[in-house]
Length: 251
Image (cartoon, rainbow, N blue to C red; front, side, top):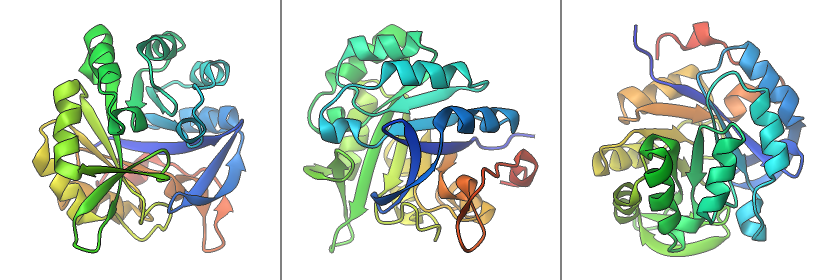
């Protein structure tokens, strides 16, 4: 029976994994290589690894660490953070990464890296990352560099531009629901799913299996991604990787 993809999202900061709330207050949750081993043993559908400081600090991906992490991954893994040039994409793909997530570079005007990457490796290997938050007028604004920089872009226009450039998938994150575990912004997911015909991966806010299901059944997402749901356990948010494929069967 078909089930939408459920993708754990791991946030890389330096050499460790963290979890944020609303893109702030990162809390250390463990060693990335060990975490990937556990998710591999639990047979996660895919993994998404995002370096939350690379673009903000203006530095390239940590290729050596990413290659080490990818070497432990038994399922497809995507990486985002600090990607600004095609040569970086090529090196990441050669290191074992199946997908690259291009976010800030595209939001700040560099769509060329998406076009070149899609031309070389296919659109299925290129994910357009979009970080957004709701405005007072109930619209959405696109942010860059881990929500530290305004872009002035309108949501639907940017989504369509990413797809036109060659992105074969959208990773959509709501800054205001990130890490809250209060549920996805279904209005945002619906708007994105209606704007483009490529898969939309909803991210930001999942706190239960029901939230994942809502994003697909009510929001129109093709797949769902979550961080806190899979790395925290209980009301005190004890760190525990708890991905269980059997519990996801009904999504």
